[in-house]
Length: 98
Image (cartoon, one colour):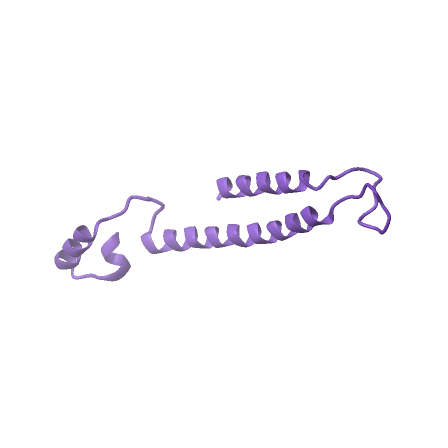
């Protein structure tokens, strides 16, 4: 989750830096030779909203995985092991994967 957030922040800073951001320059106006480009700023605002949604999704998926498996181990149990547990214990679903 933190890695995803850090990559998102780096991309946002990169997009913001490409916008020719200068002090004391007007936004796009008729006849202005030097102006601040508003497109990268709009892209950064959109990227912030999208990254917030993605971070929330990753947190919810991690929480759901924790609640389903009863722990935070990331080892994958093979299908043969699950089938063996179903035969041995007579359980199915998430209980067989524990």
